[in-house]
Image (cartoon, rainbow, N blue to C red; front, top):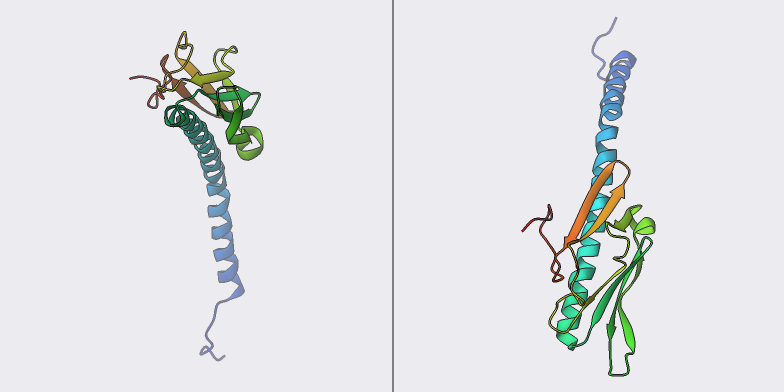
Amino acid sequence: MDRSRRGYTLTEMLIVVSVVGLLTLFSLPKFRGLVERNKLTAAREELAAAIATARAAAVQKGRTATLFLSGNQMWVTVVTNNAGSTTTIVPVKSFGTLYNVSVSPKDPALTSVTFDMRGFATPRLSQTGVFRMVRGTKKDSLCITTAGQLMPRGCSL
């Protein structure tokens, strides 16, 4: 029998395919958890950016700006003239559609946050505003001080 042929036998190929299959099988749950965590973080950053945009617009334009949160949707408007006309500066975004994340305030009465021309929440929030976010088994939150500033992660100063 001539042993000078080069290549792999069918048995060697089956062993390699089996090992790769097992590695993939064990790594899939880790990737699924990573995707959940990343989408939750993206939703949190989107809400934080909208709050920061509302504050900045209020200060820059010298008029009130309001962040609205209704259901799973969020948008920001700013007053543009003395007659009270508003323009939308952050269009309506659905956290459910974009990230498959559910966002809700801890206090059901907190459906909007209005910032005055100095960047403070008006009227001043009666307590720290907490927005809870849930995606699958992962949870996160975003907190606003009574004056309207974003709090660092963990909701403590």
